[in-house]
Image (cartoon, rainbow, N blue to C red; front, side, top):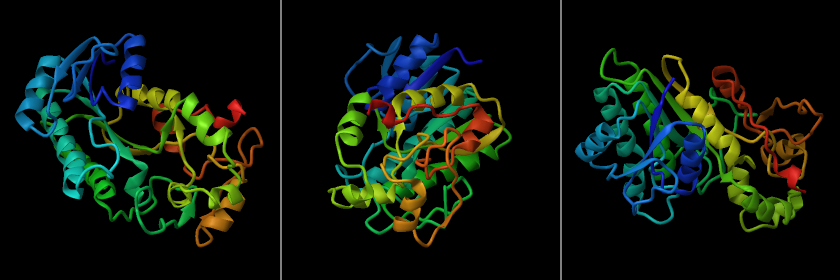
Length: 300
């Protein structure tokens, strides 16, 4: 089992939660970030430019970590030119994988995204063949952010094929929108989440293109911990989602109204809920023993 974890991008919104969780769980944590020094959430901090291969290698070596969680990428594509966004996703991931392999670090968890499928920030409607989507669904990204996420997964495939100088276990976590209690209260509970309400909102296109998906930060950090403790060999992609959608409309109706060309294969939840997620996370449960438990309806 790992004892020391380097987390890139630990100054970010999700990174701070990951560091807090892992530190509390008893891991020695090191924050590798290019921002200001922040040791409030970790045991150590090393200022690092993740796009500089040599600097990252030196920082990772100094961290003396036996596992890496790579979160240090541009979180949204609306503040940077496309090539910078793509570079952040792709080259930082390559540098992490290469340095980890050279340093004998066996386990790496990468922050991929829902966008890898070709949703999220796409200007056009998402392509959906069937619902719930799983890891076998085709990917059709076209924007720089989404293409970068798909490419980092392809790079991970390549490293996993190496017989030497590569991490033994690589997990690409396809995160949707990550929320905490306050954000969920404001966005879900206090808004009209019916299909009619969604259609009238300013963010309808985005919510349609993300399959009304989300995950609570407590489930997200639990999955990160499960990924760094994984023992499978190779590279695996995993969809991440809450157990329900963000809508107050049954999932079967959402599928029929918003994704009419898709083959809907969904079922009601174990508790009889008709709001089951349109993202299938059973692979994460099977591979890592992770199962999301938090849903926004418990705040209502």
